[in-house]
Length: 263
Image 1 (cartoon, one colour):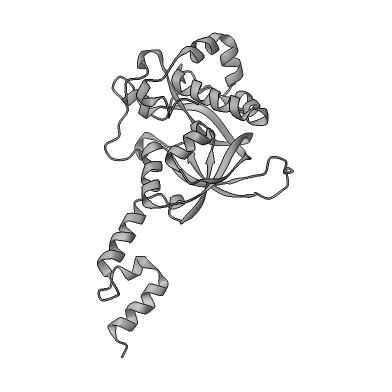
Image 2 (spheres, rainbow, N blue to C red; image 1 turned 180 degrees about the horizontal axis):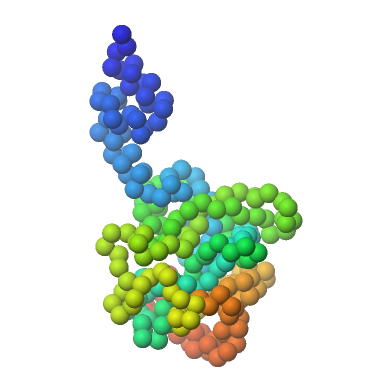
C-alpha cells in the first residue's frame, strides 16, 4: 500500500491541477493559491516566458515598457491572414471621459481573421510574473488574449512561422469580464456595423501615429496602408488624407496620460 506522501509525489509529477486536490503534498495551501491564480489568466499568458505581438499602442517601445519594463528582443514581424482595424470601443478613454462619444470618434485597434490580409507588427520577449500578467490584462480589458503565429518580415509565402506570440484579438460583448459594460451612451463595445460611423479615437490615433513615425519604414507604411476603419474598406491613409490628420495631430492627452499616449 502506497503512503499518502508517495501518492502526492506521483500526482505532483502530473501537474499542479491534480496536486492541489490532495492534502499532505508539500505546502498544499500555497500550491492551491498558485494554481487558482494561474487559471484566472488567459492560457496564452500562463507560461513563464512569452513573446508579445504588438500592433497598436504597444508598437511604441516606451509604451510597451510601461507594462513590460524588462522586455527584450524588440523586433518587427509580419502577421498573416489577419486584418488590423479600428473596430472596438476604446474602454479606457471612454471611461475616463477623454473622448466625446457623440462623435463616434472612440475606436481602438483590434484584429480579426481575414484571409489574404497581413500587417507589420512588433514582437518582443518577456519573462512574466503575476504583476505583469495583471497589468497586461488590465490594460487590454475586453480583448480575447490568444496565441497566434508570426513570420519574419522577409519570409516567403510558403515559409513556416517564425514563432508564436500573445495577441489581443477581437472578442464580443458576451465575453467581457464581469463588471465591464459598454460606456454610457454607447450600444456596445464589440460588434460595430460596417456602416456605424465608428472612427478612431483622436488621442489614441495620434499616439499610434507618433510611434509609427519613430519606427518609420515598413512599419509606418503598413500602419497607414494595412489598417482599415470599421467599414473594412477605408484605409487609415485614406481617412487621414480626407481631412482628419490635422485634427488628430492637434489633440493632446491630459497631463496624467501624457506618458501613456505620448507616442
